[in-house]
Length: 325
Image (cartoon, rainbow, N blue to C red; front, side, top):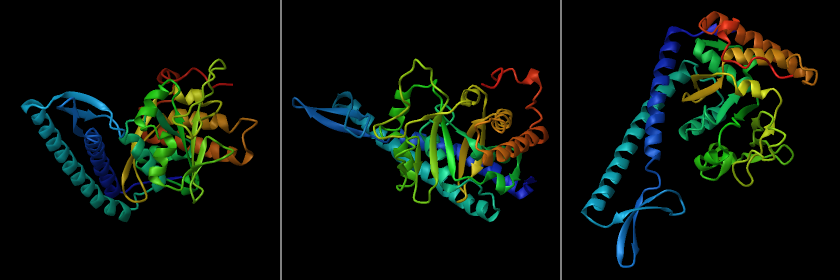
């Protein structure tokens, strides 16, 4: 059910993952210069402003003087250096992407890889959002150095779980007020929220992005939404167990050869949750066999390639004590 990567594939997967770490650091550094600085006149004097948004708001750094003029010069020079470094890293990854495609390392659908990369660039991946469902298999196979049967990885959607322990306001700010749908549309402008399933967006190829959360407390009347007209999270029973389980990270390769980070539940949590789903009376019968097969596959991967991740009770102390009813 899983074929091991060749030595060449392993080498380039490792090298590309290392470059991705440099890319994210450089991207976030360049992003810190995004809104820039400007001079504003007030009551006959000029003041240097550090802008904090697209609306022109910001904070004053003081009246024009040799000191504030030097601050502006250093800012512009720093921005230029940051952009040069970012462009150099992107060019290097582009070179590796050609080799990754030739080695058939590209596994993740481009639309998924690009959405996760944007979330990672904004510092939202792994804290506020994690990936659930079938797409998690790409993380487990990359970390193990194997390729899973495509019949088990094929999927027409990606599930993004929002961690309800995080502040909605912080996510709204990081998404620049455009919401999750705004971020998704940067990847593909054809994505639109679906009328009936308000937690779901679909593009022209009918690929879907779902925003989901564990059930909220009955006393909590809020809805999980990050902007007006944005997706509204669907509450799914059983997700609280995954939300409270440890996280697992891996760098995967998109179909275009570019890397992206996956943050998913610990593979033991995935295997146990899939086994649990396959027994639920209300679960779609067509999905039950696939759930069971995916659970068995990931358990096999854990036992063979991740011996440090034991299923023994003594090694599962960081997990919630039991699955929800």
